[in-house]
Length: 382
Image 1: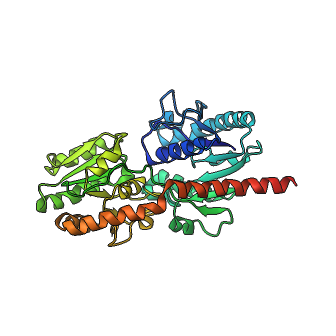
Image 2 (image 1 turned 90 degrees about the vertical axis):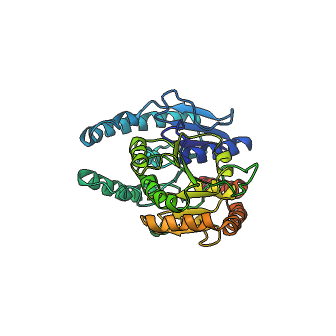
Image 3 (image 1 turned 60 degrees about the vertical axis):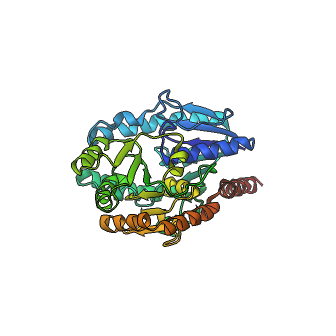
């Protein structure tokens, strides 16, 4: 099959980019013709390595150029960029003649299904139904977020298939006849497992509002008072880095909390840690938990929308904490820190449960989906 993925860019180190790279590489190894179309690559290399057979096209729309502008300028510039995007993507798809075209719910979501190139259109979301509302923005931005949330529901109904990551999120979209659930797969098969003996907790993610690392840092001040020999390493980068660094200094935790840049060898960092912590305010299906689980780590996470509840089996491979409850979060971390046997037991159970997210199982679901939409195309032609 000829399969096209459409995304803003592949240069970031985020979970969505990692998932796309893994899926595209898997399909390319099977012999499918894969093309990744971007809008904002700007000559940058993909963060995650792509199979040499995968074709890459950038349309040069550059939506991110508007990020430093005010809301009004963004609203005025957006329609022009959308028009350019539609024209450029239409021309490219007519040339490629793909069987399947997949939107990763980026700027193409409002119009990809309208392009008449005979490819079946699939849209997949890597966040939850209410991601815009979870920004918690005020004023005019709040109105914009509610409007976009409403339009999302209208757009997804126009696609041949709409793929969400969790059963929980499926329920939030209502009774759609084109919706299905396919979770993310494990990013890798670890070469080693954590012994859970190192006095180190790991967290991974972008330094922004979504990941809630300010909560984690404050919770760690409570952990530090009772476990001063343990450290917290947070791998990531993003707009709130200076604020997070200032918070660490304010709480006098610079010796035990380390903000580290993203690394491509994240597997090694999980293996050298004993617990993974996640304080996200919203997610889709967090790759951090899937990766840490595969490496045999017990998990402590906020029970945010959506994803942690699909991965963490309470009391078996980790603990779920009510969002925003820093005190309870610290208590659960301390419970694992002070109970070596429980920590090892949960780590072993994590590794067992990771098999349900194996790449072969998840990709088989995608291949089945592709065949289903293709068979409908053939039936319609008859």
